Length: 208
Image (tube, rainbow, N blue to C red):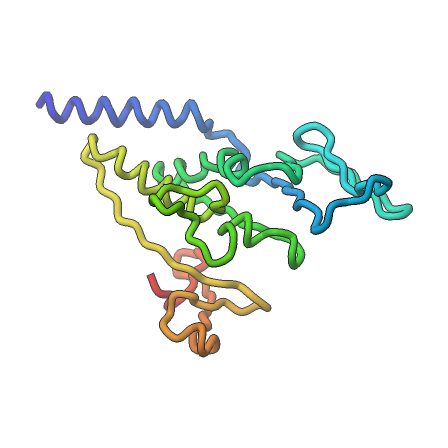
């Protein structure tokens, strides 16, 4: 009928539009570098050991050792949380197309991983009016984008079921941060990683 045809046309247009925005031959893995601001302002005579070359090059100098490399994107210490998210936000949209996506931060202690992923400590990434704050990290921004996209798809009668888990990998242990009592007794929240019957890696028993 006319109603069914209309829905099919909308779905077709949406899928074509998403394909044009995110081509299928796009690389599956991209590496971004974010430079943390110095803990204390450098002196006038102090030369920074890190320099950015264009949008993808970086150079590190320590005494006689020099490292130069090119990555998919390099963000200097003046980059904002919004800039980081905008560069990665297409991964959120691709999940609704049925594709898997993963964003993770890797680096030494005190390099800013938690700030990039979550934002300042003891905040939810929200302003008092409920909107995303400028300092919000990738996780709260991704969740808000998820719900916005799901709400925007209601006109094609799409139905979404969302589940969330929150685990921590630390010292080769996987801990369920949503399990009651995890803060008091971390051992009770420890989880096992196994390979499922279809070959996929699964974390068994985590709270959702």
